[in-house]
View (cartoon, rainbow, N blue to C red):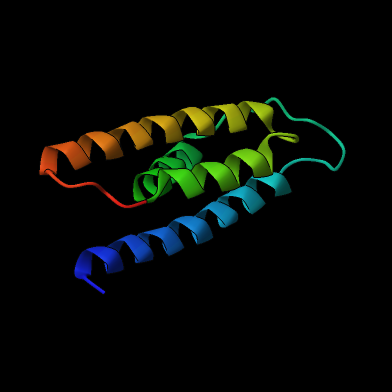
Length: 102
């Protein structure tokens, strides 16, 4: 296992655990059976950006599908942030000259 593989693996684990934590905290604020139209708070945006830059695919999958029914506005914004982060990953991989393994 190379150092690059280790960094990617640790980033993936942090991204998955962090995404689950953000999802649980966001769901706790809503009443069961009701749909909330709240937008992301600044603190939530920062957390999502940090997690998406570590691993945009897992962050998007966990948060978007975990929140899309109860918090559709937040889920849509998270989806946009993760797509931008994915584009940054692709740009970064071309700039440094090797593909970044997701």
